[in-house]
Length: 202
Image (cartoon, rainbow, N blue to C red; front, side, top):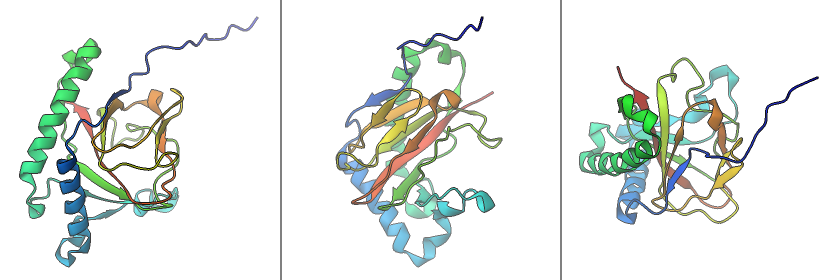
C-alpha cells in the first residue's frame, strides 16, 4: 500500500503591506534609475540582466542598479528605505518567532529594477537556489509603480497566489524552495521595483 503525504490549506508565509511606502519616495527612486540610464558617465553601474545566466540564458530582459552607489547621491533615500523595511522585518519576525534567534542583515543592498513591456524573467525560481545565494533567508520587494490589472503580477507556485503591483506595496517572503515564484508578463508600460534580501549573519 502506498502512503501519500497529506496537504492542507495553511499559512503561506508571504506578508504584504499595501501602499506602505510613500509615493514621493517611489517616484524619486524611479527618477534616479532613469537619470542613471541616460548618463554616459554612469553606465558601468547598470546591470543588464540578459547576461545573468551566461550560456544558459533563460530569456531574462531587464536592467538594474544598486541604489547605494555613492555616485547617485541617494544616501538619504537609502536611509528611508532601510527604516521602512526594518518596520516590516520586525513585524514579520514577530509573526514567525523562530527567526528572532537568527541575526540578519540587508547586506545585498537595494536593487532597483526596470522591466520594459515584454521583458522580465518568467521562469520559476527561488532566491537561495545557487551557491552564491545560500545565505539568503528572506526576500523583500517594493513595487514602485502601479501596473494594470492582469499583467506583471508576482506569482507563487505552491501557494497558488498572485500579487498585483501597486505603488508602495512591500512584500516579504522566505528565500527557500518552498517559495518558487516568477514575474508575469509586462505588456503596457515599464514596471519598477526595489528588491533585496535579508541574509543570515554569524
